[in-house]
Image 1 (cartoon, rainbow, N blue to C red):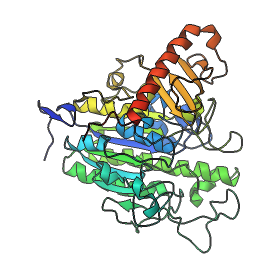
Image 2 (image 1 turned 90 degrees about the horizontal axis):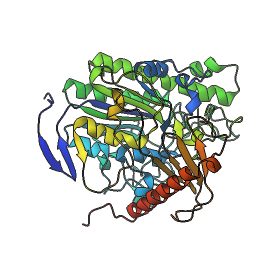
Image 3 (image 1 turned 30 degrees about the vertical axis):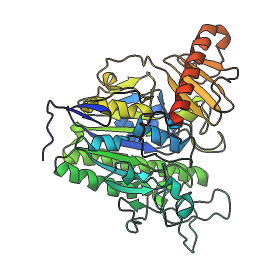
Image 4 (image 1 turned 45 degrees about the vertical axis):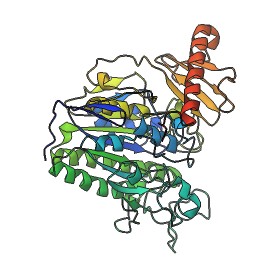
Length: 472
């Protein structure tokens, strides 16, 4: 059945829906990919030709932010439009997606979309019975919240990390960072892929994990395209989260480097090929011009600069930091014919996905459930130059507030709203590497942003107490 844009007004779940165009949506995300790991951000060490081509054809963000400096919280922000402290996913492997939350998949299904999740989930456990991954099984059943319980029709999902090559096989662990040496006596890695019926997937699981994921995502999209049904597809690659393992042909591309670097860079190039495959397949299906594709990372690179191969470029900090290197990540959006190609220095964040997509399909949130993202739709045709609304961050005792120019940053020492230390102020327009604290030169900016940060944190606490959810 062809889905046509019709003038219709519907009220459901606290949302007013004005039927409009229904583009296909594909959200692609890497795991621990640094801002400087890609060619389109000036990286020269890793071959990413397909991502670079996507950047030239679409909108490239100079300042795109993950909502958190670690994976699970950022993933939740992508599908809720809300900061993770609002619903209890404070860090990796904590909490789960609550049934009271409204996810993009649940909202889009009511608009006629078919929905699929492929890759890493990390927003709850996927089995109550089998020992699986970090928390799966009887010991973690209170965190059971698989994709299919959150609006996804089709799933090919893991709870958490897997090796980036032969994802079900456990690499050797007898020496630090020898993940690429597969044991002669192959053992299961311990993290399974599960489908939407809660069944363990056992076939077509060898080789590059990024290819294994696309082997499931592409048929899902092709089937929807043949039915002329709009699709919402999440592709969350595990690359380049540890353990990084590259196939021989990809490792050889970086043969002059140490083993760790060979396999880190090789698995990224293997993933880049799959991004190219995705773009090619969308064109072959005849739906590329009606499909919005995003690309980002969930946080900055793992490890210490100088000893780990991931690159934050010129940025300060890495994964787990609310400094720029921990949260500013590669960011792209492509929609041929609908988004003007080019670069933008306006800050955007993963929490913007939900309000942007709802705006595109004519669904407008009403009521007082707070969103932390904004619609980027005016940016697509060049009508938006400044964000005009700050982005708040909170993680592991750190806080930050980022505006169009300035960033307030410091360590909060817990969740107490009124107890903030002396905060630093950075001018990100003139000092993106955060080398100079300019708080003394702009006391009025510090005072204003501190008040804003306290108000926002109080809102987080209210949400965390469940005040956003209607009484049963």
